[in-house]
Amino acid sequence: MSVEQALTIADLKERARRRVPKMFFDYADSGAWTEGTYRANEDDFHKVKLRQRVLVDMSNRSLASEMIGEKVSMPVALAPTGLTGMQHADGEMLAAQAAEEFGVPFTLSTMSICSIEDVRSVTTKPFWFQLYVMQDKDFVHNLIDRAKAAGCSALVLTLDLQILGQRHKDVRNGLSAPPRFTPKHLWQMATRPFWCLDMLGTKRRTFGNILGHAKGVTDLSSLSSWTTEQFDPQLSWKDIEWIRERWGGKLILKGILDEEDARMSLGSGADAIIVSNHGGRQLDGAASSISMLPRIVDAVGDRMEVHLDGGIRSGQDVLKAVCYGARGTYIGRPFLYGLGAGGKAGVRRALEIIHKELDVTMALCGERDIRNLSRENLLRDV
Image 1 (tube, rainbow, N blue to C red):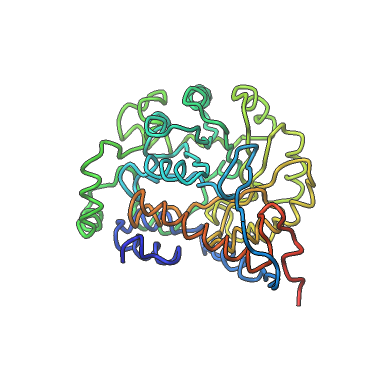
Image 2: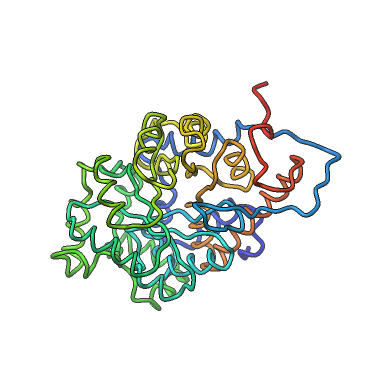
């Protein structure tokens, strides 16, 4: 099956599984510990039921809206994902191009393979940058300044990765970037010849935002030890102030999953919050993102824009989140599956699938403009 023939995100996932080495596919497709929260993120969307409406005018539909004041072709952004360039050579660059052409935001992770400057070199419109706060504050300052120099239009500050949750698949696979050359890893790559050919054609095989930029990180061995030690366990609400002042632009807080934290974010000066549990990759046993979304929307009211990340696998999922009050949503695994399945064309196909599903579902719910969706489009408990 070619990516153009894929009908669902699940189709792209299966094609990616056959094309990407197991250690990197598992990295994208894993959750923490029992993976209970990872599964709940998807399963809880299925529990939300839609109201079917008939004999209404379904012509001239529009999915266009805004996220933090930026016009988008649909309320979907590509989420920040680490090691994206290990799903496909130059992955972040290709995904950013696909997002720009489709009219949705792309968010580059701190832990990307392609650097900020790499992505800037192949795009014509501003993208977003996701920041992890490290203990080396000079490095963090430099990262923020580099994102500003690249013209990034929003900074997404991740709040829920002060300590790494364990993903058993990664431990068992001995995951690293660049990949280790043990017999097991060599076999995994040898069975994925097209992936290998693509990777041979690029020089980008390590963490591009870190190597050569962080103090004392000059080779792969020093990079490995640096990344293991650097996530800052002391990150607190007071740090948002200096980050916001240094950045000076639109700021989004990612990782809010509790009403009290949502209310605390109102005084942070941020422009939006993302309801997220890190794709089920951190606190296993936490609530799903969609189950907490209506509570958090109610907690902040119209005082701050609320977005959602986690569990979206279809355009119907996007619609359900918007009905609950999300002004935007993020897709991580869906675009990674597309990228692994077919590079830039695969990312574009993932966006096309979600766009079509969202458009048709909205019409069958009796709506023509996505900005008019509300909880009235959802069935009450039956």
